[in-house]
Length: 489
Image 1: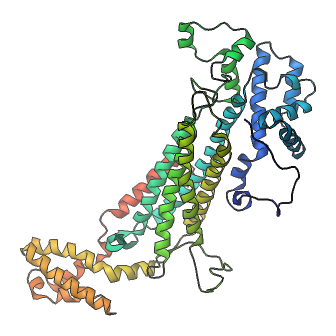
Image 2: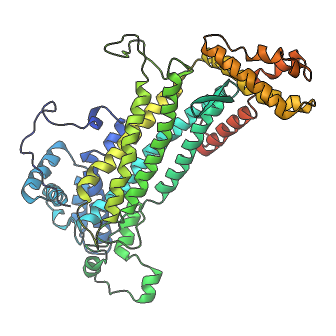
Image 3: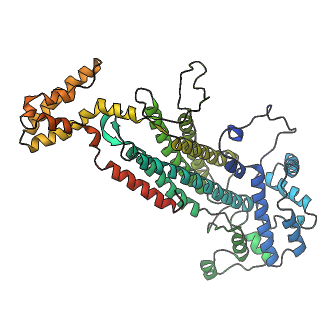
């Protein structure tokens, strides 16, 4: 893979560009997985596995293999600097690492990369790194789901007002509202597990995917049609893949199918979508006119440089900001897959260096941030009760209407009485009064003719008009815990 290196010096960190992901976003494990050192360690792991298989087939001598094995982990600042120095001259990053590695291996250096093309090394290393990065995402997602399940159970019975069209609708419970987000994340977990299990490398198929160089190297005859059907993987490839613990695509060009990258980052974008909605809902509910939820806020945290009183939901806003970025990335990888013409073009190379790493780093950051928010979520039950008191009687009129009809009233006539009283109550509330709807309805003789005022008042108490939301919330939490396994608590 060609990539000219233009830097001729080492400017200080404050004078050179650094990505926000270098210091601000993502955790240390995910950053390490996408580091320059780890990439080169993976390349060397693939070269070593290739040499081990070639030794088993009598192509590489034992002392050559031992030399490679002894130096495979020696990826240091000095060795990377040497590789970059070579790259500035030859304009090929992988071959520069070959030469830097070979300089460390005076006995075995001459057999590094034997029979291989660049993407036999890079694409298999990328597959290994995709698996590692997905494992880290899945671990973080599991912790987040466990935190959600805790909150769902904690607030399964706590009533609150549901909103449709951003307007008060009917009562639900806080736990049931949280369960919606938990369900989305559980879907993401299951999807990413499938993606992780299906990750494949290119295998070892050479410059255009025909394995010609490897068959020449091992002296194997071209397989017959029956042999191809029975064993599409040649013996050398099979040995190397076993050492790497990796499956390969049955057919490939110079690269593995770029559709794999697209599918993986689509899976990350799905997580981003789930967390975007959660964070946006939290931002709405943290707004003081509602004030039912709030993200954690530190004792010394500054909300605004101009307005000292502000308690802005900056963590939720960060989730939404990064989630938008993640959502835009699959399109780049769609283009890579669609535009990989014939057996390969290089116009995917530069953007893959950015897109794959940043998709995982951004996803790691929003998962970690969401876990902190959910674990420390502040629920103001007094505000939730106040919202219920203000809007709940409107929702409970549905229950009153059904009771009136059961008692013998005309459904259409009662609907009209309730509608008129509801409009009058809205007008009173808009004038600054508390909700008078219960008083209006309980004083209406057309209603009390069928149901006495005390029963009507009880029916208009919406706190228990939440249906089976508590049971469904707990059931969702149980499903999540079952998906996580016995260590989820």
